[in-house]
Image 1 (cartoon, rainbow, N blue to C red):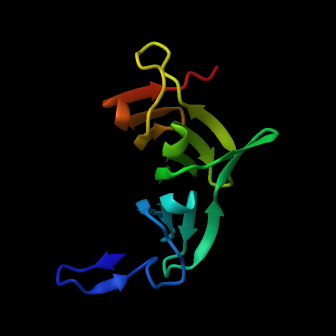
Image 2 (cartoon, rainbow, N blue to C red):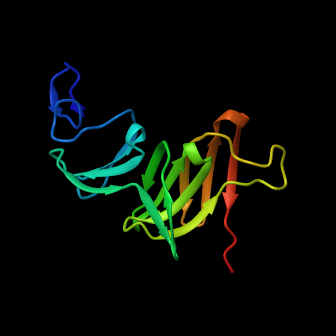
Length: 150
């Protein structure tokens, strides 16, 4: 939604518009004007064009021969190179993937710290394709994680 200081709406997505959102938790406008939204209640990431028409829905990420379904994704962010990071809150994990739903890596366990598992991560900041900062909400901590890919 784009609103000016006087309260006039210039753009709206959801509500009575052309796309049905349920409990959206984050939105990011990309360079091409499209908007990527964590549509938490529908267990999906949705991309819409600037006028609110749906471009793509992502409800799962493809990993080799399996599919990782999203469950209450609370936050999504897309980097300039097309790398997407998702706080998949209902599954207590962070997923890094491409916009075409190709799996890159997953983070859910912190073996060196108690408690060892993420618990309702709500936000994640992509530093680069192999490094993130995570708000591990229910464990009351912030984690800076690097995926050491050989």
